[in-house]
Each structure stands twice: as C-alpha cells, then as structure tokens.
Length: 64
Image (spheres, rainbow, N blue to C red):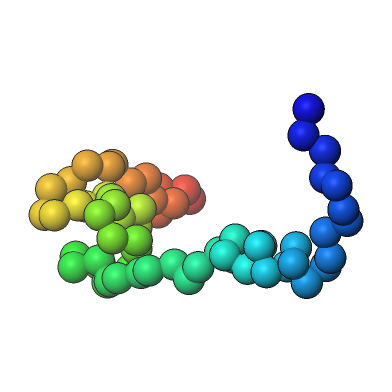
C-alpha cells in the first residue's frame, strides 16, 4: 500500500490544488425572452431552445 515517505508542505499542497478552482459561468441571452442562460441549454424562463418549445412553463397568474 502506498504511504507518503515525507510530509508534504503546505505550499506544495496548495500548488497542486491551484487548478481545482471553479471557473466563471459562461452565460448568454435567450433570443426569445432575453433571460441569461447557459449555452446549448433550454431556457427555463420561456422553455425555448433554438426556436423550438421544449418545456411548458407554468405561470403563477392563474392563482387568484
């Protein structure tokens, strides 16, 4: 079984973990409703993707 021979310093550990940070989200505007969405995904605001309606969005307007 592999066991470390020496203690790894904090700087060496942190240098190894430098590439694990989360990146920024890449967002673009939906062509139909202008909501900010991730590319190549269905818009959760209007339900459209590339001009085709994929989701039926329920609105709270029926609540009275």
